[in-house]
Length: 236
Image 1 (cartoon, helix red, strand yellow):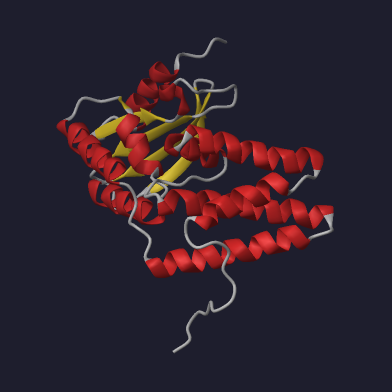
Image 2: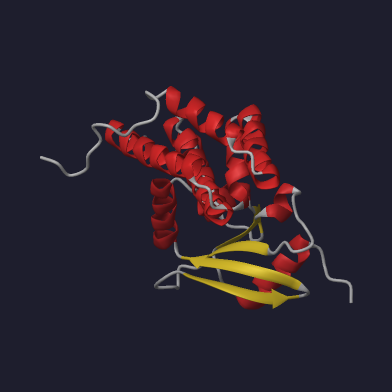
């Protein structure tokens, strides 16, 4: 059986499952031209009859579908929540989404999503930067001193996530998780993203820590370098 295109499947799904919704949009990798053999359809639905939001995973017409169902109040709540955590999953889905219905609500929520994406996440305070700098230093020292390969692998994982967060948040950019870590870094700076991937690949493939250490130090240097002595939390 030949499955329909992503857009056709999404339209059929909305017609069958949410025939009275105010708005629906198809987002995710399929609308960015980045779909893979395992890509699903990310569909955002706005239905003012709902009292609360929910998320559901289904398979329709041969496609795995992730549906995110909201009313306008819960949609805006999640917009703000995503902004605070600096991972704009829902605003991005709405911004890039292909309309599956024809309703004036779509233009309004797209404009809100675009504004959030344009403005970026809340800025870190000097205190937050100092704290994040300390914990990144601590992980780096553990990494340098570790002689256990298994432990080093997972320290490196922690450094990779913390480093990407530190670089992006101190430069007022959105962060990511999983595959979105590299994507978010590329959106910020292609060259830095390349150096980041190469540094960790050098460690994972050859057990060579030097590039990771140099990369972390180069990032910390702009904020005063590694931090240990004099750091405290909660002291009055």
